[in-house]
Image 1 (tube, helix red, strand yellow):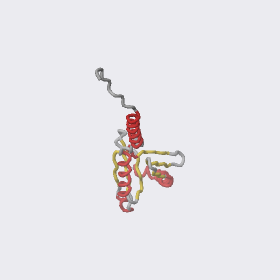
Image 2 (tube, rainbow, N blue to C red):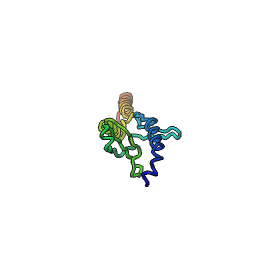
Image 3 (tube, rainbow, N blue to C red):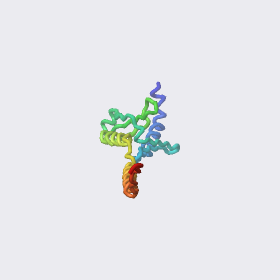
Image 4 (cartoon, rainbow, N blue to C red):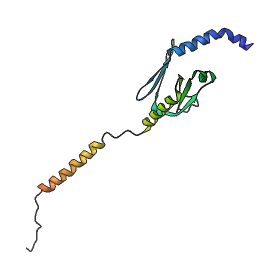
Length: 146
């Protein structure tokens, strides 16, 4: 009975799924991933690589038959579900490796841009000390009985 009742909703469900498929866009920037979709209501998710905690590959029988998979990306937000799902990915292992590389690169500490400046300032200070010592006249010690 339920299957017959859901039959009239099938065209609506297929239309919703088609428009989601047709409007979904992924953008990979140096900082993170941006995913957007929707016709009437636009949805957008922006996820920084530094927030990625775990990446899962999932595929059902039809996706495997088509050579596709979903990549589920989880963050430390406390939710048990994926924060973002990249759908219909033709080479999921390569995409997973790309995301892991970006995730590790984002987690690595950035080089200190002032490290070179600190070394230069220390060198200048050492030269100034040497100049001060060279320019200061030596005063002979005072001997009371001399």
